[in-house]
Image (cartoon, rainbow, N blue to C red; front, side, top):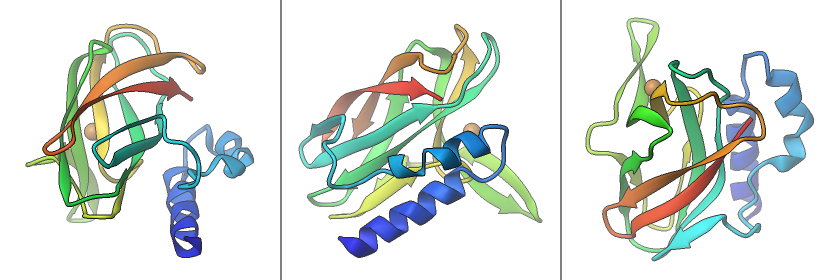
Length: 160
Ligand SMILES: [Cu+2]
């Protein structure tokens, strides 16, 4: 458990690297996802913690993040759907000749058996393409996350 917590702290700090909100997030370091906390949603062994999204302007793009834990056999996040944006896609980030590029996550986002998978800046994320409204700090919106085994899970994302 202690090892898990340390890994999560590292992930959180990485997720906060750069950006105008850096200092704000650092000040909230105690809000690091804690596997001992109650998940915001769970189904069939999959639990969701710390769902959040970047602020954005109507018509622009944004991204959403979360921590997935899996208490059962290997699963895959196949899709995220919602009406917050014209298109909602699962993306990953690759290093192409020193340039960081995001591309669709072919086959979805894998979640190991009894494992943890973080969707975070610089890694897997949910891309919100063409926001249908402004996303301001404190707003929230729903997405449906569909897993191959666990099925659909409705999650509210908090805008930060
Ligand atoms: Cu993306």
